[in-house]
Amino acid sequence: MTATGSQGPRLEAVDVGYTYPGRKATQALDGLSLEVRDNEFLAVLGPVGCGKTTLLRMFAGFLRPAKGSVRCDGADVDGPGPQRGYVLQENAIFPWMTVRENVEFGLLAKGLDPGARRSVSGELLDLIGLSSFEAAHPKELSAGMSKMVEVVRVLATDPSILLLDEPFGALDAQTRARMQDALARLWEQRRKTVLFVTHDAEEAIHLADRIVVLSPRPGRVMADLEVDLPRPRSLETRFSPGFSALKRRIWEVLGLGAAAR
Image (cartoon, rainbow, N blue to C red):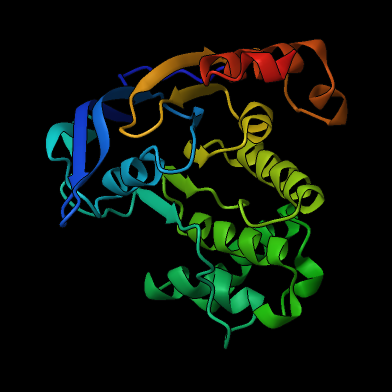
């Protein structure tokens, strides 16, 4: 299943290039173009250092392209906006707040009354299976739990677009798989437009409607692959012939074809 938009792409990069300045300038992106459709879950996959995070920061409005343009709903991105929620690689929840207080932080800033805040946070914590931890502090949570709290804290303010920067990259394989399933359930319930950055091919296949594969630095689009796997996805999906075939295709694109045999 692939989500499609009716009025054009929600996010668009057109011939984007970016070079980090310094004594040894680093060209992160060059001539990159891609589109993200409405309510689509798009994964951007590539090796470390290929410019994935740079691209995401441009869509978030924290960086401007050196050439080309990045657009949201047809307009150039000229700074952060409430319709784009951004989840960093680094831990960003507040250690002095409880889980519920963290989830409600953005709602408090928006001026919602306590009853409305509790309704939203309660629904989201239930969706990710953390209702029983609402009074816990981050130090009492596992790394995976903390990362999902970050995701729903951003989601609580109801952005139409989620920008996720390798949110599960630091987790062990088993925890990562559980968090992927939790995120997939969340997306299937809420249906936001998602741009998800990862270097893990299996993660991209399990979560995404479509995968854009980037080259090593400077990042360029090497392949744009539809993920034609039914939802909801499961353990059986991960071991299906379609999953394996797509993983092999990605490895071939990345020049790892011999390792895929």
